[in-house]
Image 1 (cartoon, rainbow, N blue to C red):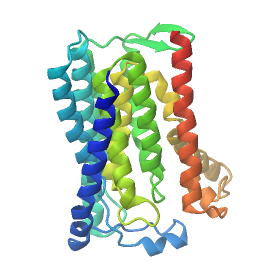
Image 2 (image 1 turned 180 degrees about the vertical axis):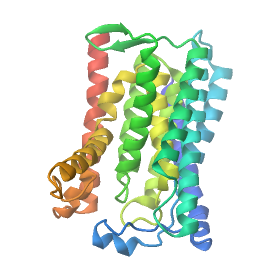
Image 3 (image 1 turned 60 degrees about the vertical axis):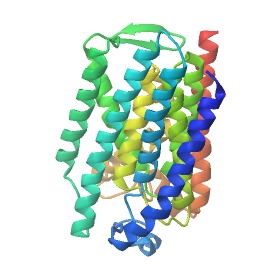
Image 4 (image 1 turned 30 degrees about the vertical axis):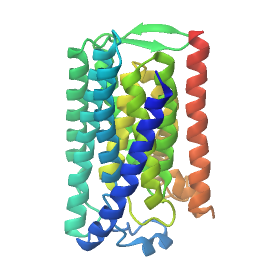
Length: 335
């Protein structure tokens, strides 16, 4: 695959995402779609009260538009026997990510209208999230996706029907893990950028050309969004953006037929979620004691005196290392 396709997709999505911000941020301010800050969060976050939210539409629009146009052009100018299956998985993944973004939008809209950090109930969110995951996996099954899980250095494990159950739980878990990681200016946008770069390299390794465009489109659009979201943030992505990103990252893993790599690439998000689980469990077992100063764990480091910029750099670097490791073990396993 010509690197020009990848760089072109990244550049186009960056420009589109950044330019959308010039219109979207003032619009969100005008309609007063401002974020309500949680009372039990860090006290210094209160100054962010009213910062426009739903900024995720920047990278959603850019990544989806560039992916669809890029894949269409690729199908016209490139001949490959695996192209149809590749395109089908990519399109199914884009639809799935948008569906999660829609759930996030509903949640954000309820919060904004009621002016409080209460949106959909936990049960409503889980029901919708599992429904989307099941519909997506059913689509993959129709497309002929195997229930064989390819594990580097171990081989192929045929999980049969349990494959679909495990994958549904994994998708919902990772989507919520990405959502929980959103709490500091530029954090999830930076992490998603490095996750996208990892999948871009993996797409080249496995020669999934459409997925290469899909991943580069996400990387470029996240950079465009960060122009508006990096500290001090002029806009937040909201659940609209974070749920979309969670779905998109999962879709990239399935598009290259290597969902097992999510254990490595999505590890930073999963650790964020794990910190919440540990905090709640420890709090209940000890009748009020805390394991961390605050969870998710990025807030723990913030309470320890780390600046938001430092946290973003460290977490971004860790995400990049996870991505590099996933690429290396894949390459060495193949060759």
